[in-house]
Image 1 (cartoon, one colour):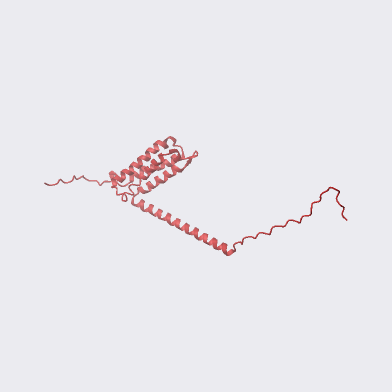
Image 2 (cartoon, one colour):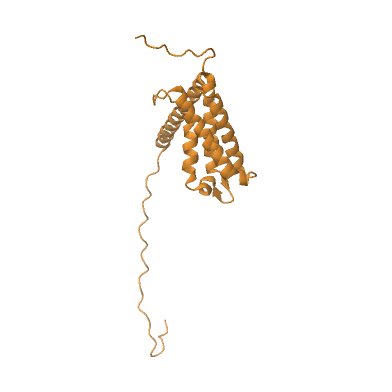
Length: 196
């Protein structure tokens, strides 16, 4: 027998226990054959990308090799370009070289690009001597940038790469085809006068 509650005491009605939500269905897991097919497709794409990249580097390597045999200055011009790019992106004291140079970066990149005039003289239909003059102008621009921007902070890493690229630019101009001393030796024959 159960005792009744004292007068004035409220007994809440009995509630049924809460119903549990139905268990969620798990998405089907890929089986071993599906996972293997995905891995095989990924491996095939990775292998194809690696082969394409390797072929592209092989073509660039071959082009540099051919250019360096044909015109020895080509390696020096490419070295100057690479050194300049490293100089402009190398971080030093929280800034990269291009941030320190601001608009002068365009001048430096233009100067190093002019080094390639003898290599591209046939494309732009330049005379050999004119192409060399452009190359020498690019080397002079690199020299100016070295004096103006790198010499004051010569002990920095940026100055190291800038010095290497400036030296490579000077040597590229010195060895470029079309230099005035590259003319054949011998007596200069004046043009014949027309007979009247």
